[in-house]
Length: 171
Ligand code: ADP
Image (cartoon, rainbow, N blue to C red; front, side, top):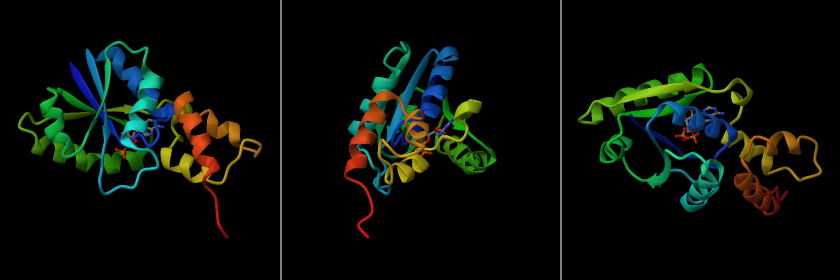
């Protein structure tokens, strides 16, 4: 079974890593696919996001990391994927994901299914967006820094720390 795990991964968090590692245990092949979405304004480039994923998951043998642009249904078909993999943190994620699952099925000739894995409880609150929001106002001495840092794998954490230096309010 080939699974494709698409996402923005801007940047990859321990929540994403947990989903990928758990899925790699039951999939024959897992393709983690970084979405290049021209309508989104990511903090990290596709190349950076891909590099952080590679660093975090390099020990997983049946896992590949790629990037794609365009319709997921087309890309999944191109890669010969049997199903799409997504992680669910809460009911809000499910409500957002359910229509995408329906569209992806109808837009692929193979009627591709979407498989959901629940977030690991210890990462169920972890969100790339909130980490980015908080990190923009952080420094290493600030209370809460460790809490944020622990949610990112090493390469993503280092890059985020570097970015933090150039962030901040001007007023
Ligand atoms: P997208 O912009 O496609 O939602 P994300 O990088 O935000 O990309 O998320 C990719 C996938 O990982 C989604 O299925 C999302 O629900 C899931 N995900 C995000 N954070 C977590 C987490 N902490 N635990 C489990 N799954 C997560």
